[in-house]
Image 1: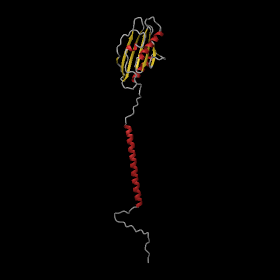
Image 2: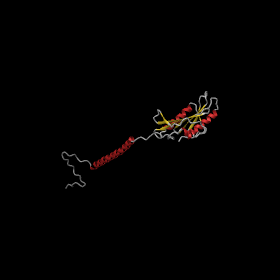
Image 3: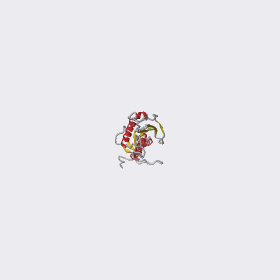
Length: 231
């Protein structure tokens, strides 16, 4: 008698019309797992990329930081009266007038100007004049006012004024100004103090007075009085 088949026994596959033979179950599961994992990885990359792009987008649309450097603040907000200047110096001739400071015109749209003119005169005596220009910065902290005052002083130095090494009151910088001495002797001081530009001129009493040292001392004294009157 013929012996029957032994286990394990694989039954021959019967193919039915319209149905392909099944593929290996293990390979199918592996492919499905890999596909799902790939989708998750791509989804993760997509999420990360979204946050990166969002962050970059926010950084690119944010308001740029200000690059303007802060300048020197204005030290003075007003100018004194001429009588206040004269009260700080002895033996001055009579004050010609004590008008208050008045507005001055300028083409600089970053500042507002005001000016003061003072004069002390007397026949047979040396005379003195003080001119002040206050430059107020329209934008606080921009440094426009002090920059204007400093520029005036530097222009005078470029023209030949000699910087003064000694202190002239509270002046930031001061210089001796020379004038044509073919006529009556004159001595001048140009200084700036914060945002105020000041010019001082002393004129000798007589054309015969050629004492330049005394003229310089008087000019320095009047410049000091003008400096100390500034608030």
